[in-house]
Length: 122
Image (cartoon, rainbow, N blue to C red; front, side):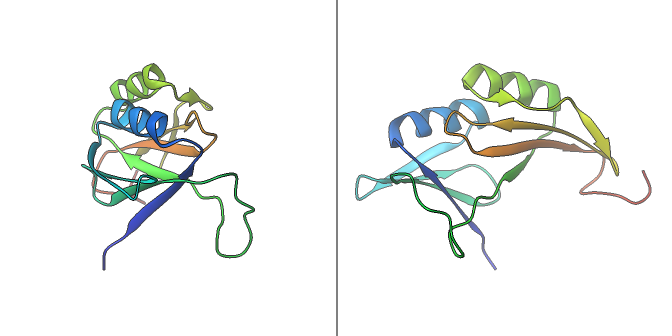
């Protein structure tokens, strides 16, 4: 199974710039002028240029967790690109996590794991 991540944004250009600078993703292509395909993570990320959508049933707000090797370095990079840090570092089940908001109001987390994923043995 493959997972595709879609994020609604008001303007494509600034969103592409943010996700490239904050997370090091690569712009693969722009589709029909209003969809940007970004790669470089375990899932393909699509930025969808949309006017403000009414979130009902199918279209719901979500947040994405980006797993990083060095939380402090990744946090500095995200903030320098325009992210707003919303929490201090929280440690839980062999992970360290900081929550952020991108310039378009979408929440996301940067997470560093001690192992491959969350662990009951922490």
